Image 1 (cartoon, rainbow, N blue to C red):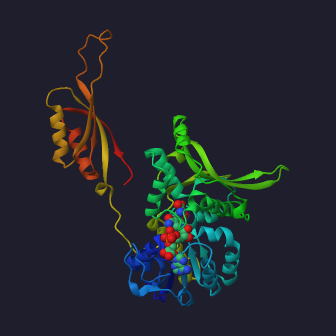
Image 2 (image 1 turned 180 degrees about the vertical axis):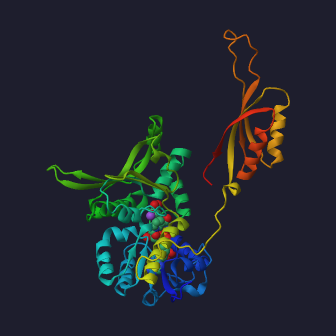
Image 3 (image 1 turned 30 degrees about the vertical axis):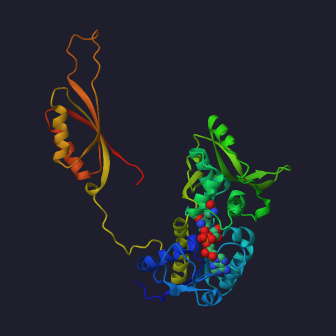
Length: 444
Ligand SMILES: NC(=O)C1=CN([C@@H]2O[C@H](COP(=O)(O)OP(=O)(O)OC[C@H]3O[C@@H](n4cnc5c(N)ncnc54)[C@H](O)[C@@H]3O)[C@@H](O)[C@H]2O)C=CC1
Ligand SMILES: N[C@@H](CC=O)C(=O)O
Ligand code: NA
């Protein structure tokens, strides 16, 4: 590993996201050091009350109420206190010192982004904010970097996990909005003041950030039309369901033409009916999804956890590692780290489930024999479907074809074991032919 000095990381805030960032930084210290080329040393966590009870057990000596002196010693500052002040002043101080900053604070980026980016640029520092929009989902970087050569025409998405959770609960379980919000808050999805979620302010800030990046334009938060979900009733949800729709809080950012036919930007956030068959209708709980339409790439879709402490911490750490790599390398850093050098499994050692179709003799004892061939190789059967071809008596005087088609589903098995079963089946005199093997894949 490189001999680069450890990089000092100051964390501001130890709430839902901050405490998870601290935990992942401490638990992943060695691995992160390999990825960065230097240790990421968590030098302290600035909080309001060092004795407050927290969900995550963190070393008490890390806590301080003196954020200023922590920032003064840091190479990288992670701001996770939220809101405008003192977050804005702390980030300004850090950037003015030349430290890189990572934040999840969409309220701040949407309202004071230009001022902070200007300081960052002037001081040669980075201000990363992937977690500010759609939590764990990589969306800022793809929009800003990967699509930098394309023309984005429209963004349509669910960008607030709390309201998606509430609407989903109202729709799926008939929960009251208040009960659903209580659970969303317990799960760490809601803002410190959940009015930001339910009245659509949070989604409005995210829409302003997305539209600004996508359309290379300053999109003030107040120019984004906003309606929250507080006026959505369970009767409306039921009526929407009957008509084949689902109610979702959408953020829609578009490149349009104004009445004079000139290019313009429109951004709005409001509840809307989405057809039940639309992919957005299948976004449940605290998840988010963002569709991007662009001239060259066409349609792209991003989906995943839009809220939650540990999920959001993933995006924060990604930003942190990226900034730290630049500090170590004096540039973008490693294109791809290879330090783990794990063995790559041959296909025979891969475990999956299988569906095997075969034609067998239609006679007594065959099924038991075939089941035996599977169990001889340690492959256990999950499903078995048998069909016998119908015989058209008027077309032929021959006896009915004495074979049956079997479709067998297995539980998880190693590929080499499955190969052995197929070989055994192929050479068994009860089997006419193994007609096909498909692997059955599903989410982990
Ligand atoms: N919770 C989530 O799912 C997501 C949150 N975010 C953003 O991440 C940031 C943090 O959010 P959460 O962790 O959920 O909030 P939180 O309310 O759980 O945590 C904020 C913490 O900062 C502390 N704090 C407030 N003022 C402080 C100060 N002056 N100095 C030190 N600590 C102070 C609070 O006591 C609290 O412990 C916010 O900007 C939020 O919008 C972004 C994406 C997802
Ligand atoms: N409160 C926000 C948290 C993530 O940005 C949400 O519910 O989406
Ligand atoms: Na994100």
